[in-house]
Image (cartoon, rainbow, N blue to C red):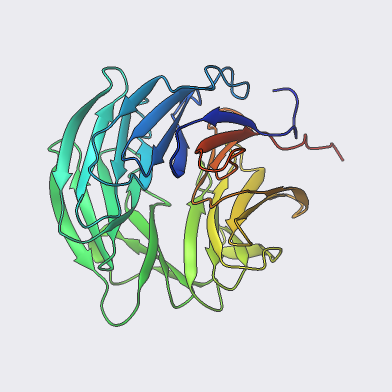
Length: 321
């Protein structure tokens, strides 16, 4: 990987709000969803220089409202799941990138579908809804398996499957992060006091060694899971943290705050030092790292007003001590 720390390359989309980039399991393709109801697949060669910048390789116009969340299957590199956070489009949709066709649509309730997260083995998918409920989908049968809701007045912000096949992790508005077994979701085995206010987002490293959380208190907390201890916090953003993610080797953590249009900070998980700050020109909802190289994709750096773009960026090289 060469040319670290250069200005972002851009994959031009269309005259819409572009959201939620996501790399496939090999890091060769990137996805984007948009307010024009379309999913686009882009080829990245190799890892950073972008081919065919003015058009995508495939488009999936399956949704009836804006596409707000997309995730590739963890072990099947051609399968992807997507959703809209609209009450008029409540299907969880699945596509095959080999045929460029929708393969299934699983209808849920009339609540907004906010976040998707695959089980590590890809056998199930969990969906968090605006009703503060989790819906589990059986991928083999392509149907809703079960549904679970939070009790009391606590609100659910985000869910991530992990740190094992038998656990899910929830971000809640009381500032906690709860890790619970699938068979006892109302009895978490860990309750991490991660933030002074609303916990807004979560991310696991690929090896599940680290967990990061962002909050409306403008803090990012980095947790080491073996000892379940908070290694450090990052307090650079002045506003609520919207999204975060680890690089493939867990050396880097990127997080986006709501400063102005949005600011992405990239920090070292080993030293805590700030590597770079990216000041965006529009709203950014998701950051996505390549699973094969230290390369970051994000939406929200449009060079021309009204155009959606997915940008590709690489952090500076780590210096040896």
